[in-house]
Length: 397
Ligand code: AMP
Ligand code: ZN
Ligand code: ZN
Image (cartoon, rainbow, N blue to C red; front, top):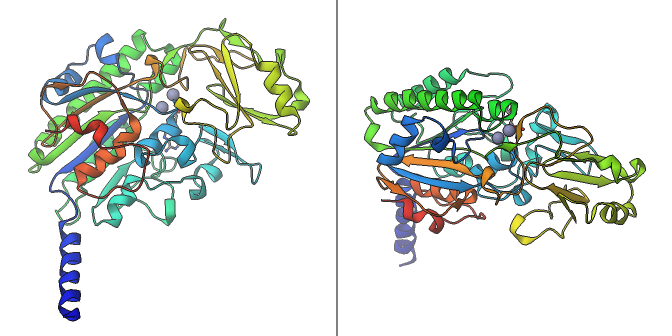
């Protein structure tokens, strides 16, 4: 009897492995800094077509509304405080080293990347995945990568080449073909920083991305698997205006000897030189107009921030559009502010066999729900995360 039971059990296990995964394919594109209302302000016929044929929604980023924290949130379903990429730049307390986008040693070190990125969740469950750049995808998180991936620093393709690469991946023979393709594009963020969110250059950058995505779409439609492709376009955060006059200078309030470093200005992580200076810094900044200061561990719950081991001793968040810096930024636009401010929100479009058609969702959803959404589309089990599939279930057919 026991033997029969064991045989049945192994048959059931074998069936589960075979049954994992969906017949459909998912392509998710991140346009950096794709603010939710660029499609209202600019002429974007393709993004409008996607809204008509599929789903249109607005997604809120996680705090802080920066590139590295949010791309890795999209990949893991964890808020930055939980996955560990708490900012584009932060101090690693154990070593005193700095994590930053431009420091290749720390940027590429898997120990800072927590959680279970979707490409690993998929691979473990037998679903082939591909990344054409995505924060974390060229780092050997848990010692592994997606089945196909590219090094962002060593092997950079133009935007047009990335489109070709996506089509090449989806044209591979079935047994090699990825069911998940994730791709990253730097615009309209780059121009949004230089020229501000509402400007002629940002209009042109957004409209170019609209045409390029249309080209990608046309090519996807010519594939034999076209009717099986779920196609998602979204991004990491929005963008707002900076002005030189809206600035609070740390040096007007803080003594240099109190501080080891102040990393970033949206938000700022302040590392005190000695623990007794934490109170001095806190009281010096409390009550200053246009900024809010908290000690680590004391941030309001809605920010979901402040408990990570590498967090600054204090966090300063400036009002939207304000800078906490000794020198004003040369940029016209930036992001990183309170993620509940609408300028930080992100456009979301999705079309394909699993999505409703002509559906416009009225309330926002959180970007931690992308990971469970992708797991649903791929037919795989998600690892524990901060989002839920329930929050986005209404987008499904
Ligand atoms: P932000 O300062 O938050 O606007 O960051 C945007 C910058 O992140 C862009 O200039 C990109 O070049 C950079 N970036 C995006 N993905 C990666 C990556 N995987 N590795 C290094 N830098 C990246
Ligand atoms: Zn970004
Ligand atoms: Zn940016």
